[in-house]
Length: 153
Image 1 (tube, helix red, strand yellow):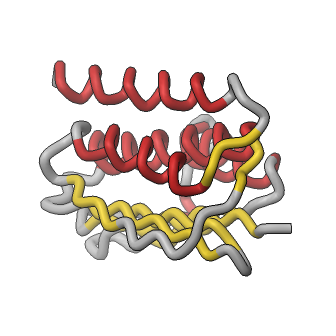
Image 2 (cartoon, rainbow, N blue to C red):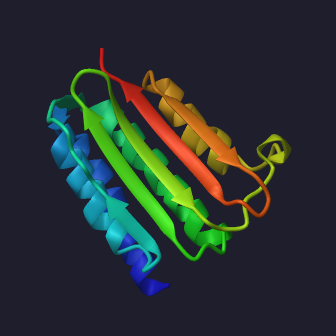
């Protein structure tokens, strides 16, 4: 539990540091998230096939980082997964994509209680507020997939 708390602090610090400049490169953003995510929990596996490097506005980088933190934390705390995979893809011609997938319990997306802000506010709203989108797919017994996409203008 202590190492998870330290890793969450590292991710929060990475997010804070991102806002000190106007832009961050996609490769630096992905590397920072990957490094912190690997120390969160032994179940987290990181796949980072970076296709290209481009500038990402700091506001966008912060939103992606915070939504990723929330999705990873949800998987670690609630899914009872054996494995959690974080995939990050940067395609200069189209978009920055982050996928968090687990093989855990899953849940019915249409039955998220209104008082649960983790998915609706911390993930979906953060992405829409930066011009991106968050897609959450899950079924009981089939795990969960969270896909965060930010299109490049």
